[in-house]
Image (cartoon, rainbow, N blue to C red; front, side, top):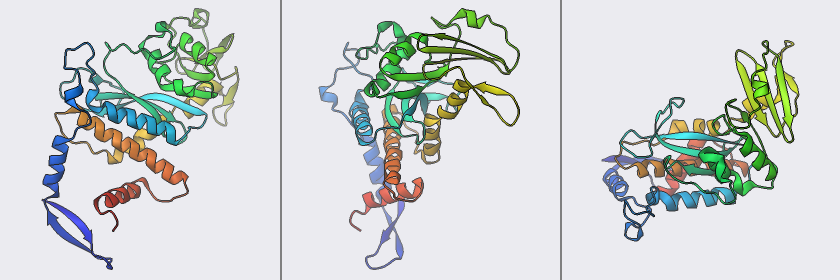
Length: 324
Protein backbone atom coordinates (compact mmCIF):
# COMPACT_ATOMS: atom_id res chain seq x y z
CA UNK A 1 0.00 0.00 0.00
CA UNK A 2 1.24 3.48 -0.85
CA UNK A 3 0.35 6.80 0.72
CA UNK A 4 -0.68 9.61 -1.62
CA UNK A 5 -1.87 13.15 -1.12
CA UNK A 6 -5.18 14.19 -2.61
CA UNK A 7 -6.18 17.86 -2.65
CA UNK A 8 -9.85 18.53 -1.97
CA UNK A 9 -11.34 21.20 -4.31
CA UNK A 10 -11.59 24.66 -2.77
CA UNK A 11 -9.32 23.65 0.07
CA UNK A 12 -5.58 23.92 0.71
CA UNK A 13 -5.56 20.93 3.05
CA UNK A 14 -4.28 17.56 1.91
CA UNK A 15 -5.92 14.36 3.05
CA UNK A 16 -3.89 11.21 3.30
CA UNK A 17 -5.56 8.25 1.65
CA UNK A 18 -4.39 4.68 1.29
CA UNK A 19 -4.74 3.01 -2.08
CA UNK A 20 -3.32 0.30 -4.22
CA UNK A 21 -1.11 2.55 -6.34
CA UNK A 22 1.98 0.62 -5.29
CA UNK A 23 0.58 -2.55 -6.84
CA UNK A 24 -0.45 -0.60 -9.91
CA UNK A 25 3.04 0.92 -10.22
CA UNK A 26 4.71 -2.48 -9.90
CA UNK A 27 2.37 -3.93 -12.53
CA UNK A 28 3.17 -1.12 -14.97
CA UNK A 29 6.88 -1.52 -14.33
CA UNK A 30 6.64 -5.27 -14.88
CA UNK A 31 4.99 -4.94 -18.30
CA UNK A 32 6.87 -1.80 -19.36
CA UNK A 33 7.88 -2.16 -23.00
CA UNK A 34 9.03 0.15 -25.80
CA UNK A 35 9.18 -2.12 -28.86
CA UNK A 36 7.26 -4.97 -30.49
CA UNK A 37 9.07 -8.29 -30.09
CA UNK A 38 6.92 -9.82 -32.85
CA UNK A 39 8.53 -7.58 -35.47
CA UNK A 40 12.11 -7.97 -34.26
CA UNK A 41 14.86 -10.34 -35.31
CA UNK A 42 15.56 -13.15 -32.81
CA UNK A 43 18.79 -13.39 -30.86
CA UNK A 44 21.47 -14.96 -33.02
CA UNK A 45 20.11 -13.43 -36.22
CA UNK A 46 22.73 -11.35 -38.14
CA UNK A 47 20.43 -8.31 -37.95
CA UNK A 48 19.65 -8.69 -34.24
CA UNK A 49 19.99 -5.37 -32.40
CA UNK A 50 21.09 -5.38 -28.76
CA UNK A 51 19.28 -2.15 -27.98
CA UNK A 52 16.08 -3.19 -29.70
CA UNK A 53 14.02 -2.98 -26.50
CA UNK A 54 14.77 0.73 -26.01
CA UNK A 55 15.66 1.83 -29.56
CA UNK A 56 12.40 3.83 -30.03
CA UNK A 57 13.09 5.68 -26.77
CA UNK A 58 16.71 6.44 -27.75
CA UNK A 59 15.71 7.71 -31.19
CA UNK A 60 12.86 9.82 -29.82
CA UNK A 61 14.94 11.56 -27.16
CA UNK A 62 17.90 12.17 -29.48
CA UNK A 63 15.60 13.79 -32.01
CA UNK A 64 13.80 15.94 -29.43
CA UNK A 65 16.98 17.04 -27.63
CA UNK A 66 18.47 18.31 -30.88
CA UNK A 67 15.25 19.95 -32.13
CA UNK A 68 14.40 21.87 -28.95
CA UNK A 69 17.71 23.61 -28.23
CA UNK A 70 20.90 24.61 -30.03
CA UNK A 71 23.92 24.51 -27.69
CA UNK A 72 26.40 27.36 -27.29
CA UNK A 73 29.85 27.19 -28.86
CA UNK A 74 31.68 25.17 -26.18
CA UNK A 75 30.64 21.52 -26.00
CA UNK A 76 32.22 18.35 -24.62
CA UNK A 77 31.97 14.59 -24.94
CA UNK A 78 32.41 12.22 -22.00
CA UNK A 79 30.96 9.05 -20.50
CA UNK A 80 28.33 8.32 -17.87
CA UNK A 81 27.62 4.96 -16.26
CA UNK A 82 24.22 3.55 -15.30
CA UNK A 83 24.68 1.17 -12.38
CA UNK A 84 23.93 -2.46 -13.29
CA UNK A 85 25.66 -5.49 -11.78
CA UNK A 86 23.87 -8.46 -13.34
CA UNK A 87 25.17 -10.38 -16.35
CA UNK A 88 25.12 -8.33 -19.54
CA UNK A 89 27.20 -8.72 -22.67
CA UNK A 90 28.01 -5.02 -23.02
CA UNK A 91 28.31 -4.12 -19.32
CA UNK A 92 31.36 -1.96 -18.64
CA UNK A 93 33.80 -1.72 -15.75
CA UNK A 94 35.09 1.85 -15.35
CA UNK A 95 37.27 2.30 -12.22
CA UNK A 96 37.37 6.10 -12.60
CA UNK A 97 33.60 6.35 -12.08
CA UNK A 98 31.86 6.20 -8.71
CA UNK A 99 29.47 3.65 -10.19
CA UNK A 100 32.06 1.23 -11.54
CA UNK A 101 29.86 -1.39 -13.21
CA UNK A 102 27.01 -0.73 -15.57
CA UNK A 103 25.74 0.40 -18.96
CA UNK A 104 27.87 3.13 -20.50
CA UNK A 105 26.50 6.22 -22.21
CA UNK A 106 28.45 8.60 -24.40
CA UNK A 107 27.07 12.13 -23.99
CA UNK A 108 27.53 15.30 -25.98
CA UNK A 109 26.73 18.14 -23.56
CA UNK A 110 26.85 21.91 -23.55
CA UNK A 111 29.58 23.11 -21.23
CA UNK A 112 27.73 25.91 -19.43
CA UNK A 113 24.46 24.12 -18.65
CA UNK A 114 25.03 20.36 -18.95
CA UNK A 115 22.23 20.14 -21.53
CA UNK A 116 22.53 16.80 -23.35
CA UNK A 117 22.36 17.45 -27.07
CA UNK A 118 22.95 13.85 -28.14
CA UNK A 119 23.85 10.53 -26.52
CA UNK A 120 24.77 7.02 -27.51
CA UNK A 121 24.47 3.78 -25.53
CA UNK A 122 27.57 1.59 -25.70
CA UNK A 123 26.73 -1.78 -27.27
CA UNK A 124 29.98 -3.72 -26.97
CA UNK A 125 33.41 -3.71 -28.57
CA UNK A 126 32.31 -6.08 -31.32
CA UNK A 127 29.78 -3.57 -32.68
CA UNK A 128 30.78 -2.09 -36.02
CA UNK A 129 29.94 1.61 -35.95
CA UNK A 130 30.00 3.24 -39.38
CA UNK A 131 28.94 6.93 -39.24
CA UNK A 132 28.29 8.60 -42.57
CA UNK A 133 31.42 10.23 -43.97
CA UNK A 134 33.72 8.99 -41.21
CA UNK A 135 37.10 7.57 -42.31
CA UNK A 136 37.37 3.92 -41.33
CA UNK A 137 40.86 4.24 -39.84
CA UNK A 138 39.74 6.57 -37.03
CA UNK A 139 38.87 3.57 -34.85
CA UNK A 140 35.96 3.05 -32.48
CA UNK A 141 36.67 6.07 -30.25
CA UNK A 142 36.99 8.42 -33.21
CA UNK A 143 33.84 7.05 -34.82
CA UNK A 144 31.91 7.57 -31.59
CA UNK A 145 32.93 11.24 -31.51
CA UNK A 146 32.12 11.62 -35.21
CA UNK A 147 28.69 10.09 -34.75
CA UNK A 148 27.83 12.39 -31.84
CA UNK A 149 29.14 15.64 -33.29
CA UNK A 150 28.31 15.23 -37.00
CA UNK A 151 24.94 17.06 -36.76
CA UNK A 152 26.94 20.16 -35.69
CA UNK A 153 29.35 20.15 -38.63
CA UNK A 154 30.05 23.48 -40.37
CA UNK A 155 28.82 25.52 -37.38
CA UNK A 156 32.10 26.52 -35.73
CA UNK A 157 31.79 24.58 -32.47
CA UNK A 158 34.65 24.05 -30.00
CA UNK A 159 34.75 20.45 -28.79
CA UNK A 160 36.60 19.27 -25.66
CA UNK A 161 37.35 15.56 -25.16
CA UNK A 162 39.56 13.49 -22.86
CA UNK A 163 42.63 11.50 -23.83
CA UNK A 164 40.60 8.41 -24.78
CA UNK A 165 39.30 10.25 -27.87
CA UNK A 166 42.13 12.70 -28.63
CA UNK A 167 44.07 11.84 -31.77
CA UNK A 168 45.78 13.73 -34.60
CA UNK A 169 43.72 12.13 -37.44
CA UNK A 170 40.39 12.81 -35.67
CA UNK A 171 41.22 16.44 -34.89
CA UNK A 172 42.36 17.03 -38.47
CA UNK A 173 39.18 15.63 -39.99
CA UNK A 174 36.93 17.51 -37.56
CA UNK A 175 38.79 20.74 -38.31
CA UNK A 176 37.88 20.28 -41.98
CA UNK A 177 34.26 20.05 -40.82
CA UNK A 178 34.65 23.36 -38.92
CA UNK A 179 34.79 21.70 -35.49
CA UNK A 180 37.73 22.90 -33.41
CA UNK A 181 38.98 20.35 -30.85
CA UNK A 182 41.07 20.33 -27.71
CA UNK A 183 42.10 17.55 -25.35
CA UNK A 184 44.97 15.88 -23.47
CA UNK A 185 46.92 13.53 -25.69
CA UNK A 186 48.59 10.18 -25.24
CA UNK A 187 52.10 10.60 -26.72
CA UNK A 188 52.04 7.03 -28.03
CA UNK A 189 49.09 7.80 -30.35
CA UNK A 190 49.66 7.69 -34.10
CA UNK A 191 50.84 11.00 -35.54
CA UNK A 192 51.88 12.62 -32.26
CA UNK A 193 55.32 14.29 -32.76
CA UNK A 194 57.95 12.21 -30.96
CA UNK A 195 60.35 15.14 -31.17
CA UNK A 196 58.19 16.81 -28.53
CA UNK A 197 58.02 13.68 -26.39
CA UNK A 198 61.81 13.40 -26.10
CA UNK A 199 62.24 17.07 -25.14
CA UNK A 200 63.26 17.35 -21.49
CA UNK A 201 61.66 20.18 -19.49
CA UNK A 202 61.99 21.60 -15.99
CA UNK A 203 58.86 22.19 -13.94
CA UNK A 204 56.84 25.09 -15.34
CA UNK A 205 58.48 24.97 -18.77
CA UNK A 206 56.68 24.15 -21.98
CA UNK A 207 57.46 23.26 -25.57
CA UNK A 208 55.12 23.51 -28.53
CA UNK A 209 54.96 22.55 -32.20
CA UNK A 210 52.60 23.67 -34.96
CA UNK A 211 51.68 21.49 -37.90
CA UNK A 212 49.23 23.34 -40.12
CA UNK A 213 46.03 23.70 -38.04
CA UNK A 214 47.21 21.60 -35.07
CA UNK A 215 49.06 22.77 -31.97
CA UNK A 216 50.84 20.18 -29.82
CA UNK A 217 52.05 21.21 -26.38
CA UNK A 218 54.20 19.56 -23.75
CA UNK A 219 54.07 21.21 -20.33
CA UNK A 220 55.95 20.07 -17.27
CA UNK A 221 53.90 20.32 -14.07
CA UNK A 222 54.18 17.57 -11.47
CA UNK A 223 54.44 15.33 -14.51
CA UNK A 224 54.53 15.78 -18.27
CA UNK A 225 51.22 17.01 -19.71
CA UNK A 226 50.57 16.68 -23.44
CA UNK A 227 47.84 18.66 -25.20
CA UNK A 228 46.52 18.67 -28.74
CA UNK A 229 44.39 21.54 -30.02
CA UNK A 230 43.03 23.01 -33.24
CA UNK A 231 41.56 25.94 -31.28
CA UNK A 232 44.44 27.56 -29.40
CA UNK A 233 47.64 29.44 -30.09
CA UNK A 234 50.84 28.86 -28.11
CA UNK A 235 49.93 31.30 -25.32
CA UNK A 236 49.84 31.08 -21.53
CA UNK A 237 47.78 32.33 -18.59
CA UNK A 238 48.77 32.96 -14.97
CA UNK A 239 47.87 30.14 -12.62
CA UNK A 240 47.50 32.39 -9.56
CA UNK A 241 49.01 35.55 -8.13
CA UNK A 242 52.45 34.02 -8.48
CA UNK A 243 54.51 34.33 -11.61
CA UNK A 244 53.91 30.72 -12.69
CA UNK A 245 51.90 30.19 -15.87
CA UNK A 246 50.21 27.34 -17.72
CA UNK A 247 49.38 26.87 -21.41
CA UNK A 248 46.04 28.35 -22.44
CA UNK A 249 44.97 25.01 -23.91
CA UNK A 250 45.40 23.32 -20.51
CA UNK A 251 43.56 26.13 -18.72
CA UNK A 252 40.62 26.08 -21.14
CA UNK A 253 40.37 22.29 -21.06
CA UNK A 254 40.14 22.28 -17.25
CA UNK A 255 37.56 25.06 -17.38
CA UNK A 256 35.38 23.80 -20.23
CA UNK A 257 35.50 19.99 -19.97
CA UNK A 258 32.78 19.94 -17.31
CA UNK A 259 29.46 19.72 -19.15
CA UNK A 260 28.91 15.97 -18.68
CA UNK A 261 30.11 16.09 -15.06
CA UNK A 262 27.69 18.94 -14.36
CA UNK A 263 24.88 16.92 -15.94
CA UNK A 264 25.73 13.89 -13.79
CA UNK A 265 25.86 16.04 -10.63
CA UNK A 266 22.41 17.48 -11.31
CA UNK A 267 20.91 14.01 -11.81
CA UNK A 268 22.72 12.19 -9.00
CA UNK A 269 20.49 13.20 -6.03
CA UNK A 270 17.32 12.14 -7.85
CA UNK A 271 18.23 8.92 -9.65
CA UNK A 272 15.41 6.38 -9.30
CA UNK A 273 17.65 3.35 -9.26
CA UNK A 274 15.77 0.13 -8.47
CA UNK A 275 16.94 -3.46 -8.42
CA UNK A 276 15.86 -5.18 -11.59
CA UNK A 277 16.91 -8.11 -13.74
CA UNK A 278 16.04 -6.17 -16.90
CA UNK A 279 18.82 -3.81 -17.94
CA UNK A 280 16.63 -1.92 -20.39
CA UNK A 281 14.26 -0.84 -17.61
CA UNK A 282 17.11 0.80 -15.72
CA UNK A 283 18.36 2.51 -18.85
CA UNK A 284 14.89 3.67 -19.85
CA UNK A 285 14.24 5.25 -16.44
CA UNK A 286 17.63 6.99 -16.60
CA UNK A 287 16.86 8.37 -20.06
CA UNK A 288 13.52 9.69 -18.85
CA UNK A 289 15.30 11.50 -16.02
CA UNK A 290 17.87 12.81 -18.51
CA UNK A 291 14.96 14.24 -20.50
CA UNK A 292 13.57 15.67 -17.26
CA UNK A 293 16.76 17.67 -16.65
CA UNK A 294 16.81 18.95 -20.23
CA UNK A 295 13.19 20.01 -19.79
CA UNK A 296 14.08 21.81 -16.54
CA UNK A 297 16.84 23.72 -18.32
CA UNK A 298 14.45 24.84 -21.08
CA UNK A 299 11.88 25.74 -18.42
CA UNK A 300 14.45 27.90 -16.60
CA UNK A 301 15.67 29.47 -19.83
CA UNK A 302 12.10 30.64 -20.47
CA UNK A 303 12.35 32.76 -17.33
CA UNK A 304 10.69 30.43 -14.84
CA UNK A 305 12.14 30.09 -11.36
CA UNK A 306 12.45 27.22 -8.92
CA UNK A 307 14.73 24.28 -8.18
CA UNK A 308 15.12 21.07 -10.16
CA UNK A 309 13.47 19.19 -7.27
CA UNK A 310 10.44 21.48 -7.28
CA UNK A 311 10.16 21.14 -11.06
CA UNK A 312 10.07 17.34 -10.81
CA UNK A 313 7.47 17.44 -8.04
CA UNK A 314 5.23 19.66 -10.17
CA UNK A 315 5.59 17.34 -13.17
CA UNK A 316 4.66 14.30 -11.07
CA UNK A 317 1.75 16.07 -9.44
CA UNK A 318 0.32 17.13 -12.82
CA UNK A 319 0.70 13.60 -14.17
CA UNK A 320 -1.13 12.11 -11.17
CA UNK A 321 -3.82 14.77 -10.89
CA UNK A 322 -4.32 16.43 -14.27
CA UNK A 323 -6.58 19.44 -14.16
CA UNK A 324 -6.60 19.75 -10.36
